[in-house]
Image 1 (cartoon, rainbow, N blue to C red):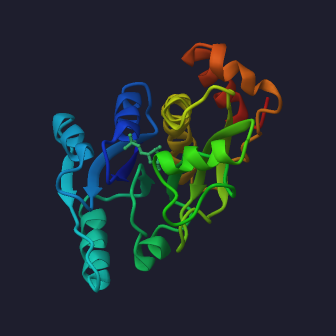
Image 2 (cartoon, rainbow, N blue to C red; image 1 turned 90 degrees about the vertical axis):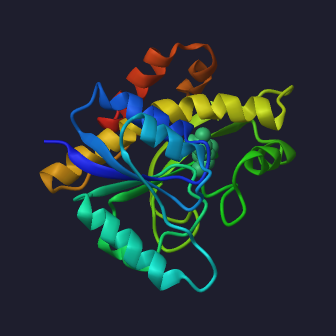
Length: 232
Ligand code: GRF
């Protein structure tokens, strides 16, 4: 049985697309609902093209309770059991976090706890990584709690920074790994949700990150799958 999942997105939705594309190869989740706070979000077009339910839940100051109620209503209607944030720029309402504790993931384009928090999104993250002179950045997937980027880390994958990088070139290298890591993390979480247990711990990749540049997607994917199996 597949776990019914929702994706929340504010932007173009390339991570949503990666999750949708992966479905054909996965039994673990099915995306039934895409929610955006912006009517113009590209993610909504991707959802409609894939014939999924696409809904706008606008977030304006003072609308907190309405947003929570509307969001919970949609999740309930679709029988949703897991939520993936993919470029969603709002805080998830507390009542939704509470109802889906340890069943909501977010993806962040750096190695948290560094380079995260409110306002740290898009190219800004990569600018700060370059400004700090980091030699390694990466992708973090974490559980969502009541604040920005603070939930327990679920999986991380490193990506090298090159001396000639610009924020854009770095963003592209990181995004490639996001698109491989997120669907595998979604499988991992949903398998555990379906079986009513905690997902096994992710084993970090050690020194293998340089492969990120040279290796084909399949090789990175193989290494990530192994990490999800505890490094075996
Ligand atoms: C990604 O870089 C993700 O890590 C961050 O927001 C961006 C969303 O990109 N949370 P997209 O809309 O999935 O293309």
